[in-house]
Image (cartoon, rainbow, N blue to C red; front, top):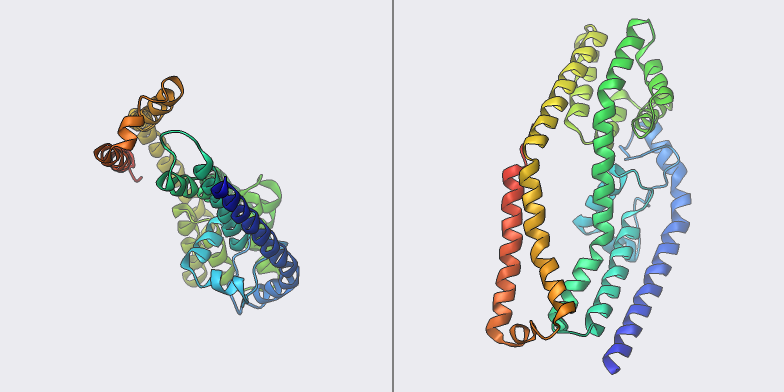
Length: 322
């Protein structure tokens, strides 16, 4: 009972700390909104924005924010959050991960059965603590897949608008109004940045950073090259849309051919875990001897490592870049 009480106190303190830090940064975000918009409009600094109303973190955080900002993960997390289309900050994500890790540690310590112990508690804390980051990654992947599907249609719309006599900036505004989100949201942000006075190079660089797709880099390079050398931009964009569609079609064919490998990887990964959980419920003492024996613990650790390595190898084989 003493261990459970100590873990409860630790979890309670961590949750209070996370809430206090989160409230502090929520209060400071509103003060930095206008600063970020002015810097973006003046072109003095490239700011990653999902939309003009997005409230970003302070440029020079203090206290806990300064310590978190010193970590490379903070910048990486903020990029992932922005690309996922969420309005979180990196500090909020880290606080959520810490709170989930504390809950996982508490559950691992208080969990009965043959898998309980310090090692199981640490592994459970790591697994539960990574859930917010996994959620952000899944949201990011889903959003980027949607953007990739919408992009050829937007390029065709832009090419037709320019052939009809509209300027490039007016065409961007029309795309933002006509194309559905999330791509319409990104084009609205691109138009609004340039409309506020930001240089085209800065606005396109921000657009490329918010949407890290190969097709978007092609689009940005085409626009900037046409601005420097001249040429028929509408024809370039139309050909680019055709190439993107053909590449997307080829990507779908490769995905269909590699479906068997993905299914095999999923089954081989889930089957041992499901079998172990089933044995724990049906016959709780069946795995107790292996968990208590030193050699059995080594075998369990080796099986986990081999399972992870096998999954990584299968993923490398079926992950074909198109």
